[in-house]
Length: 393
Image (cartoon, rainbow, N blue to C red; front, side, top):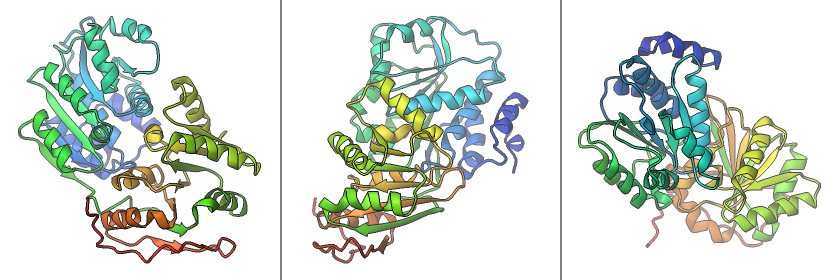
């Protein structure tokens, strides 16, 4: 199937062709016709499956086809909510690329930067606004924007927004929106909490589930290596140097761990940098830009900070620390193996990680393959995995 058969206009088709899109992904095949029909939608789609285009392309089609609606000052026609600043920036960049040949405006607003410039851009009205929940509410309180003309709402990565504690902000936003609108919810997993949120957004929606909690992207080679905690940085250095890694996104759980690991790698002449909540937005954007361009080969990141990283050919991700909750494992490894490419996901597991590992493997429905490195013998042995393990709490 081609994009043309999905009912998209010539300007949109021209833009996606120039971006190298040849055929729609499965989520795009299923979601685009539903959204174009005007029906509400709840979709489960993993990172790297093309979900952003799945909702942005039909939104642009609908907005550009309506030539009678005049854009009023401080009004918006479509609102896309994302959990992090990095993801918001990435989504708005995609919108600008897809709308290259359309007479539509887009804007991204997020916290951590001065709001005055964002308010000035909202003065003329915006067709598609991408925002993080906190900054959007701030703008609404300041009467920098109005929701009266809103036609479409998108909750992107809804599970992550709930994990980050945005439920109250989301409820406040939803209460301000027109009742007659199209609502779209995209999430990597359709947990009970996500479904409860969906019930507050709409009554009867189409549902697409391309990935269950027990499946991950098909072209990701997953494996783990057991290692004592005090040997993790040495083991990572060994892989980078001995196996001549070209690039890696390395996940840690805490921001102080990110800075410490950058320093440890530096002592072994490995240049790395880090992004986390403690760094300024300008610095995070600069580092992400260097990583995407290939100028920076090794990026250390906390899970939340790395949410907006979108690189089609990222070779590998490394779980230097296993994530908690277990669902974050799916989000993390989805940074590689994108757009049909293959990727590698490596996890460092110490004895203290055993219970968490069992939960992750139960989520996957399979035991992750283990490898060993003779020069890194393990003193604290990690037990054999228990696939049906369930934590008491």
